[in-house]
Length: 86
Image 1 (tube, rainbow, N blue to C red):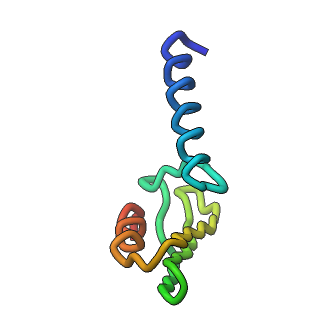
Image 2 (cartoon, one colour):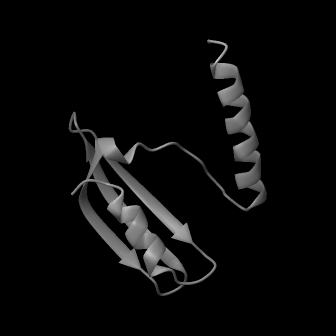
């Protein structure tokens, strides 16, 4: 750990507390530039949801699911999807 890592860790911890207070259930860091979308599904029936099947440069597969429960938001779904390669 370097001295530069300590302030970054403190800032990240504070940010996670804010997210938890806002109702976030789980948190992970995803680097969308390294992942490519293989398949995606969207739904706006009850809130907004997007499911992404992704693959990284080595061929490892991932599935990410995003929910926004406080109403429909197609722009948010499109913004998330646009961050990944096609």
